[in-house]
Length: 178
Ligand code: PRP
Image (cartoon, rainbow, N blue to C red):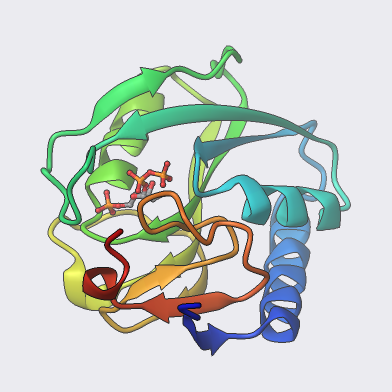
């Protein structure tokens, strides 16, 4: 069976999530409540791990957008599939995504939430591919920069496979067809 090549192991991921959670907890200390908004679907494991590691009052919500549809390259046009349920006005909002690739998704979401008048708005992504950025995006918390390869696991997929892998692996999409 095809096995993704390991790029980031479970222990390394755990360590980094712990560090991010500690920074976020410090930065938001004293704030009434942090509203974490995860970007479905890829964020689901990172969001679960990060939110459980924070030691500040927080709520979680989710939003779903789509720009890839069936493609492997972003179309650049982001479509809102499912809106968050929370009213973000006057809330301290943290957008949580699994990966920043072209940057279009995060760019769209920052504009979307900024227009809703939050008390503050920050962004957090577990991975970023610096070589692929097409738009400049505000990224306040980042897990890892990675090379321009197709990554799966820890919530990320390739044609909906491999999301539950406990590590970040690299796949060759051409070898996965069928
Ligand atoms: C992925 C990922 C980000 C977005 C990043 O979502 O979860 O939200 O793409 O890409 P960008 O920086 O080029 O906009 P995807 O559309 O694959 O959906 P999924 O999370 O449901 O797998």
